[in-house]
Image (cartoon, rainbow, N blue to C red; front, side, top):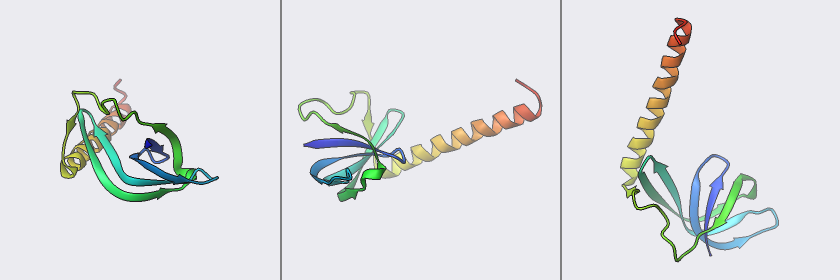
Length: 108
């Protein structure tokens, strides 16, 4: 059974369920981290992973018959998605900085 998991730190993992225990710890085979930035996505391979139950926020079964992502999404390399993530963080930081400057100048 293929699963998608949302972790407490916001990461999304996909992989095949191999085992679980009474603490909701899960073993995923062929796991990958799916990173999505805008219309870009990248699946970063992780291999065999053990996820402690306390880190799991949400688990869902993926339908093997259906398309995983909308058609407008574009697969990119790991390096490209890292650049897109950095650009997004920089834009968020800049937006916050501009808000603070405007607030200090009493400009709404």
